[in-house]
Length: 279
Image (tube, rainbow, N blue to C red; front, side, top):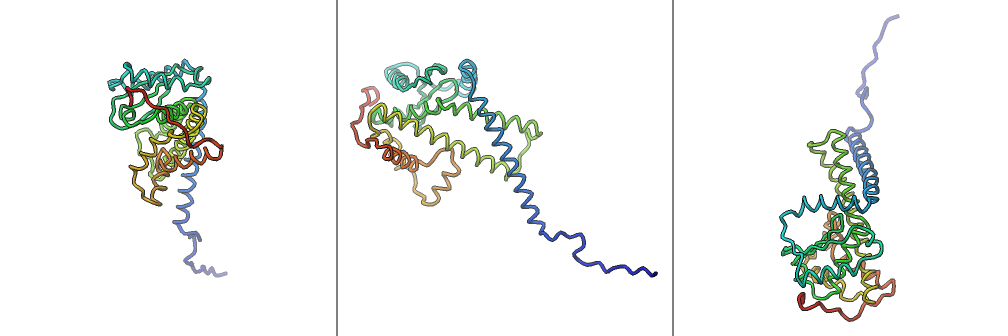
């Protein structure tokens, strides 16, 4: 029998799916798996860190404080400091009184800001104190930071960061530039997580203002003035918010005023004036 070879057609050994489609599937799988792994381990790390006892948290706070604020110009005396410290201590809940002792720091810094780090360290800048017009405004800012403290947000964030660093080291990525698409996806997941923390701290603070003053008037005035200084970029504002650790100022105000209305809280009331050393 004579052998007759078949004619080779163009489709032999060629996948019917376009290579770019296959590449897209591969990249999608890598991103999904990477983000899922990071988020899952990050949640685990955050939960473990959040269960840290007061003694361990105090030690962690000291390490963070020494690494970030050694050499910083901090104020720990004077009438202004005494007032801020007393106001912050008056906002402590029973839960917070079981945590590391509150330590208030006034930082000589022009920009208005406040922050909290593990171990009960709360910072407010001189720029913030210069901008504040009523006690209600300052109390809200302090309560927001105490909300982060009570929710153990700084410990959770620290736990997530340690997981990411450990994962990088385990996979041999230490000192290696990760693919941009993967780092971008992970960053967006982190930003979403940070915004959720900020929103929870805002709700915590506004609830405390209602409980303390019997109304929420004046509590958000600092943010309203801040909002007036921000550019209105229309739809682009939503994109900026998506890429930010904080909700936009306008969104924060709207959400909290809506919450107050839904709960039937008074939106009008008398302001509590600042003492002379802050006015």
